[in-house]
Picture 1 (cartoon, one colour):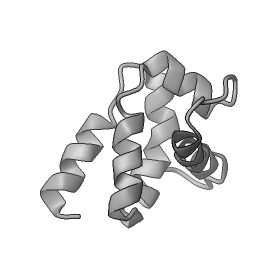
Picture 2 (cartoon, one colour):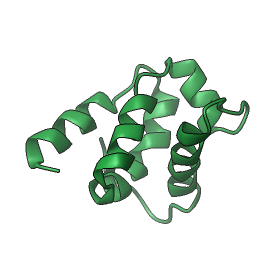
Picture 3 (cartoon, one colour):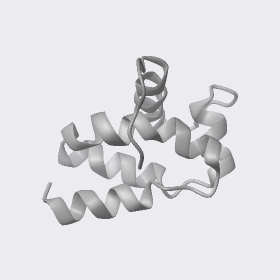
Length: 90
C-alpha cells in the first residue's frame, strides 16, 4: 500500500462518533499499516457501515452478520482491548 492510499484510508477512518474514533485509534496507528490488500479491502467495507452499527459490533453488543467483516471487527476490538499505554491520534 502506498502512502497516499494509507492516508486516504486513515482519513476515512475518522468517524462521526467520538466513541468509535477511540475504538479505531490504536488499530489505525498500529495494525492498519500491516494489512495486506485483501484485508484492506475488508476494512474499507467496514468503513461503509453506519457508525452506530459499527460501534455496536466493535463493542460486542451486536454480532456482525457478515462473517468476513466480523473477523476484521474482532481484530479492531482486540487492538483496542490489548492496548497498553497511550495511543496516538487518527
